[in-house]
Image 1 (cartoon, rainbow, N blue to C red):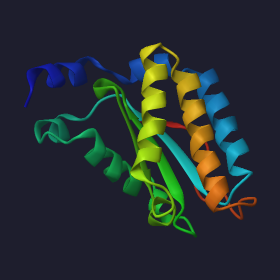
Image 2 (tube, helix red, strand yellow; image 1 turned 135 degrees about the vertical axis):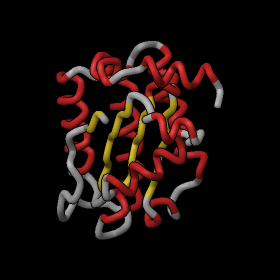
Image 3 (cartoon, one colour; image 1 turned 90 degrees about the vertical axis):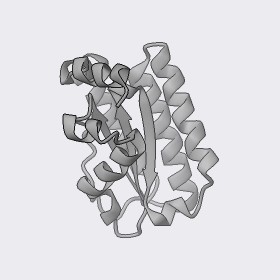
Image 4 (tube, rainbow, N blue to C red; image 1 turned 180 degrees about the horizontal axis):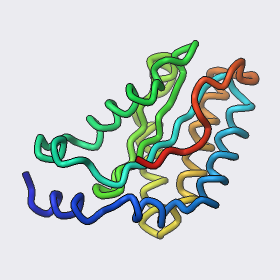
Length: 164
């Protein structure tokens, strides 16, 4: 295990996540999710994790592997049309991951999701956490609206962002 990564995870606490995403930011992100979901039949879930626990860190779990795990834990895979999207941020690694359920995954190229992640990371590098996430969610919503137009039948995932 790389000592530098271990130390980053050790010192990055939930407090850092709450500094980057205070309650007002979480409220605005929640409103954005609700608004974009009103234009399509997909579901978006936003989760921020400050750092990995020691076990996964010791096993060198990558941000992508953790995002896949969170995708399952949050039930994003369980949307009626298999069109859920997880936007996952791992603060200690400065990582942004998008995990899509198989329905929406088949509709877009990996390059689409990578571009959204890059845009969010660029905003984060400038300290614009809330704005980066809102822009990312808006882009995800545009993709869902192209492939799953119409109002959502049911809100199967919480709109409130989750800080782990």
